[in-house]
Image 1: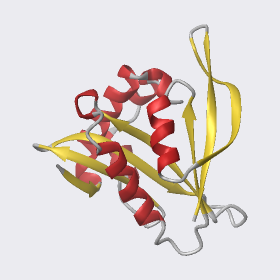
Image 2: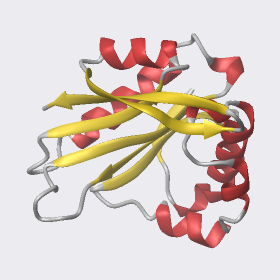
Image 3: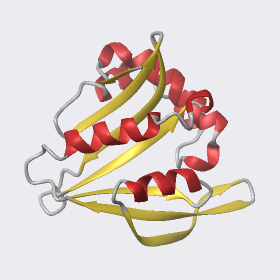
Image 4: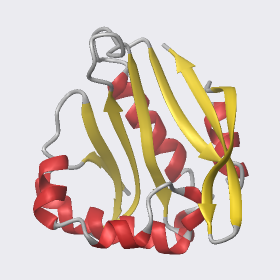
Length: 166
C-alpha cells in the first residue's frame, strides 16, 4: 500500500472515493452525496493544490485510492493555532487493516511540523464507534457533544468534538 499526500492530479480518485464515502456511510459525514455531485474536478484540483496548512493524505492500492484523511488549518489571526482533521474514510474492504491509523499518523505528523499550530480538532458522529476508538488511541480527547448535529431524514445524530493538544 502506498501512502502519500494528494496533488491536483489525484482529483478524479479523490472525487470517486469521496462519492463512495458519502453514499455508503452518510451518517459519518456532514456533507451529502447531492452536495458532492455539484463539486467539479476543477474545484477539487484547486483544493488539492497542497499547501503546508491544508492537505489530504491518501492510501493507494493498485492505483486506486482506498482511504483518505484531510487537514485544514484555521486562517484567522485568533484561530491559527488550531487545525482540523476532516473527511477520514477507509473503503469497507480495507477496514481493520490499519489503513485508517496509518492515514491519521501521516496527517498528524505533517500537521505537527506547522509552526504555531497548537491543537488539532475533529468531530465524529456518535454512530462511528470504531473511529472514536482510533482517535482516542492517537491521543484525542472528547471535549463536548453537539446534540442533533446531523439530521438524515427524521433521524438525528449527535457529534462528539475531540482535540489533540500538540
